[in-house]
Image (tube, rainbow, N blue to C red):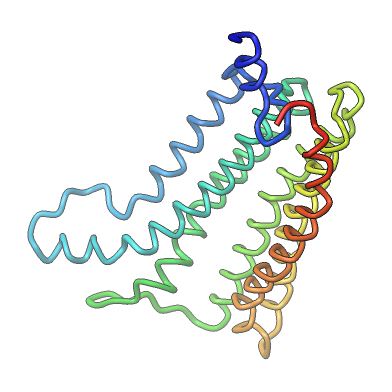
Length: 236
């Protein structure tokens, strides 16, 4: 009874969790993500009066969006660690690249959403068209670079699919994740590309909405392909 319960806990939705223990690499990653979130804090100073408090609170919607986006990146890396448990040189190097890019990504992310959401007195953010173009280019390239690092990690795991003994369901899920992450890379590059043109720069942020139908349709297709493999899996 206890043996079966332990065996079942090694699987999550049909995918065997090969990284059951928290490693030094994962601990280091969590520390860097925690530091990145600290950099997102609206203000490190305690409000001295009510007006300061209100101005600080106005920044929380932008902080919430940035927190959510960083949490998505952290979750993708967490799932990679749990599912594949890789600690070889390639995985360490790619993880360090990812963490470096995340730290680079924090301030453009924070500035962009403060500009897009806050825009309040007494000091609203104002930038020129050229500066806005540069901002959207930095954001798009930063997004693409971060998710390219994640794509590289999952591609590395897929290259080792025989060594990791991935079954058909696990291989399908890995390909699915590679596609989803690659879509984010592509959309970031498209957004950065549009930001280069004076007539299209203000369309640059709207291109990210294309992810909603693309990822939704792909998820539905994936679920249909996955269902028979999950039903046949010995551990669900």
